[in-house]
Image 1 (cartoon, helix red, strand yellow):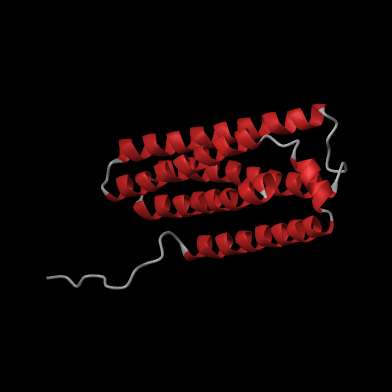
Image 2: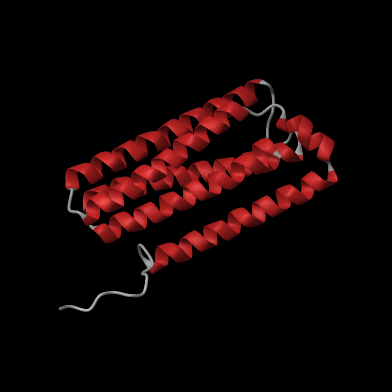
Length: 181
């Protein structure tokens, strides 16, 4: 009888986890600066925040959480050798990523038509910076999911899903800090 693995393994590749931790640190630094500035101007931040699309951001939260769930299911499909299912699940996760970016772009366009830019207020400097940086990670995650769908190996899919979950986690933190507090 072969020995069973008793210690949990880190899903995906070690270098991806180093990347994920470094990205979390970068976002953490940005959020810390954002919150420090908010303390110095709570009224200005509250007024600026009132221009954001809270409902759209809430919908985007549901979109990303659902896409993360699909990526997790794709990992299980890869482990079971269900290539067609894993590709379908990753395609759906990528499609939801595109929906997220579309909804986010519509918010940016609306803010732009109101004349709101990076320079309007410190709130917008940081909210644009953090959400655009996050959107770049969504796009990178979509590309990564497409690549691992071609590779089809459980390790590759786990690695792609780990990155995608980091993208989800960052949004779940950004959403309340930028849109709700």
